[in-house]
Image (cartoon, rainbow, N blue to C red; front, side):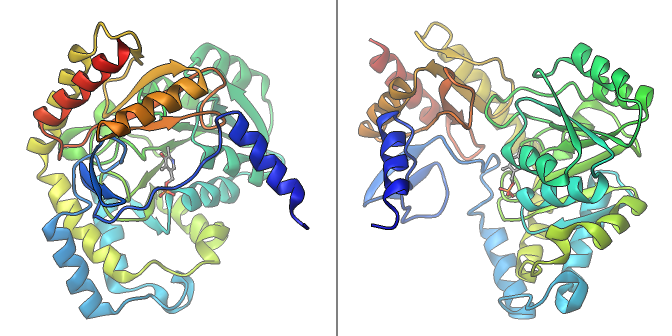
Length: 384
Ligand SMILES: *Cc1c(COP(=O)(O)O)cnc(C)c1O
């Protein structure tokens, strides 16, 4: 068997309770999903505003496909860049208050492209230890020197910046940490950038659409703006569709168009997605009621679970991880909830540090208070 070594690696993972597999949905993304013919109450999507299956987005997608077809057929730099891609970039830049924006196929690709285009082997990247895997991969791929600082530890970051005398300096951080739900101290990070002439790449995958006035994201949440900030957000989470964008000074965007390999050497996303995203941006902009409801659900969950045996991690966002610790225990709790018709993903190493396996509960504006009550009751029952 030519792949015997691969099989034994997988067997080893399975023995540690770390084997990953997929479940196949027979329904759209929503709080109530159908898997293997059974309906589950789900708390694991990143569809924070419940837009992934919204009729206005579906209509816009259909209209976009009717107008532009199914596929872009070429890269943006060849003949794949359409009028509706352009309109979306203009709208996104204005929405996050930046001079220009550039669409990428995914957030993963945006992070790879930005870091690799902006820094190289004579430069240094400073990265929070809990950053998303795509940022970690991006800094490795860039060949820059890498300095990782303890989660949100501004004192350690200041020391590392102090010691770095030459080259460009790029600080990279999740704005909302994807597996913890807490926020990066963006105003402090920006102050350090100003002090040390560094740039700041903010990955707002979980803040865009959810945080700040009209859902404008983490920069708006903190009320900060600076040409030093390179803002990245994804469009497959709260925005409910697919893709990502980077918003920054025009010179940064021009640099990405010329040097970001994950932008240059890939096919443009279907223009119809851009049509759907323009509709999504409208709903995000008008979505104060959705965001208020989401905040109510967060408060309900946190107060409802306050004396549970397992602790919710400190988070004010839609990401509400329940810390379990042991891999097998997290998996068993997730399985026990599933037997009760509730779907919450167990997140294990290497996605999170050893000994911090957790249930990553995510809330959506599409959930009802009754849905959250059902989850709370099931967790208390299982804690006994
Ligand atoms: C999901 C996520 C990404 C990747 O975005 P995709 O569009 O799914 O590729 C990047 N960064 C963070 C923090 C994320 O949570």
